[in-house]
Image 1 (tube, helix red, strand yellow):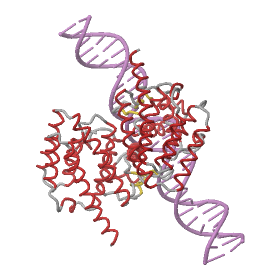
Image 2: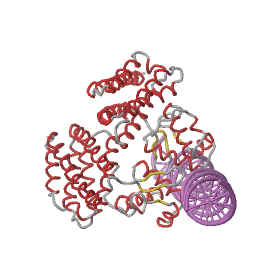
Image 3: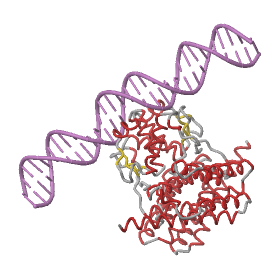
Image 4: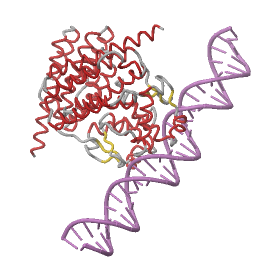
Length: 226
Length: 226
DNA sequence: ATATCAGATAATATCGATTTTCTTCCAGAT
DNA sequence: ATCTGGAAGAAAATCGATATTATCTGATAT
């Protein structure tokens, strides 16, 4: 749940956890394509470990909805679809609004600090390292909600965030933030949140998501038409 | 996702799936107490299989929030708390309302058939076999939402349903339906749903949950006071 | 030509054993 | 008396091998 700020998490911890992080990353950024068969043997060679941690990592990813399990025929990267994209976007808007309202209601001093810091870090990060920026971007959005005392709700939001970001990667790393002034949007959201202006914060947050959503949707339609 | 109507699912399928169903059941009905350590070796003997399927089943249950994984110290049944109970109840109300509205918006003929049938089966079932009744009860509630074309949302509702039912079992099998006319409540909900009366259906459904919630809450407080 | 079946092949699922990691408990030092 | 260090034991995590199950291929029958 915690958003790691340094990325060498991959070195330590258990084989299962390493496998989980690496496979998850590969699916999110599209190195493993949607629908692609995930063979244990292949992954074993890539990750250099036994089958058990691989299987366990894949099992974890199944419940993240990033991997699908086929009866007794192994695993594959989850399929994508325009419908699924819309569903994720829609659910995210619903759940994050609930979480944001609760977060602002419960928010304390520590929450405000976390929010400001993560905003600052995100703004300072150059867009050159896309994955690094996305990590900070996610941290900011999750911190926005982190005042909420609903771990389950936060878990759902976290999951949906990842599912969504995957579509963003698949649409192409470069074009994601081309047009809009993303920086200002984030700052406005943060300010409304810090002011505890619930209605404005919710409106801005949902607009933020829906705009990105509409943008990506357009991209997918173009792609489908080609 | 499909609600099995016959319960001998336990015999067929993979070892992993059997382990999953059995451990899940044991946690839901309270045979495995909240916080209880789930040792692989112990479960191996009980379920008579190797460690791998057990681990995999436990991993699946972690994402159902029915099992907690402790760093490198194995698994245990998820803890319970009044706060967690309230969170589940609250989230359920939010999510099921979203799902019900969508379900009624999209509902077709097949949905209506499913709903009526599952209602009928639930009403016919004697309360003597609690687990069997709970299965049908769940099927009814899930069918209510099943018109929705949001598999992710339905998955969340399904998960939350299980988390909630666990508290009901823990509160004591007998007293769950003591006072209210549960039958009528369900029938009223179904009728409003079939009439596509969205507002009434939502109101009745949420009242239904909140009443049961308040009842259980009272029970837990009493228990805590003892 | 198409469909069906059997054998061969490949991949998964599962097991039993090994390695690693935590926990406990006791001796010795402060 | 309390704290620290370090074995011994228990448990989890992981590996390599085996048993199962699905898939592919080609031959035969329709």
